[in-house]
Image (cartoon, rainbow, N blue to C red; front, top):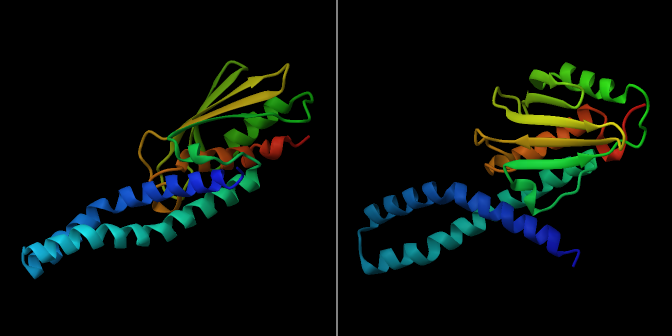
Length: 194
């Protein structure tokens, strides 16, 4: 049963990698067909072997994506599943040390991060912001809401711009942002800096 999680994630990454390669694969197949001539033999060869070759070539890209997601999730203490590739990620982060001023420290660390911008507070309960998960200027939308009595922090991140994602898969950028935000605010592994 434990093996099913990595296999599901690998298959999800493989589908994302294969989907990114459909256009180049079709282009290369049509170029090859144009060069070889449109005979039954060349068409059948392209229909059978091209998808197989592209499928095999995208498997290492998918494995690299899984490795990258696993490394980031492990560093942030966030559970990894096949839903890590979803455009919207909602995670409940619970600090162990609920001391006076922990919300203010989390807000300050979020606002002073180099990756955060357009930070706007909505009362004491919620913060909205943009977060740059990569080195470029592209960003994801995020919000963080606080429940002081329980110490829960709900982090909601969504990619509405279709960023490149993990290992160029075009997916997983919201999960990467969640991991980065959890580490930047000290909420990784369920503990807050006290």
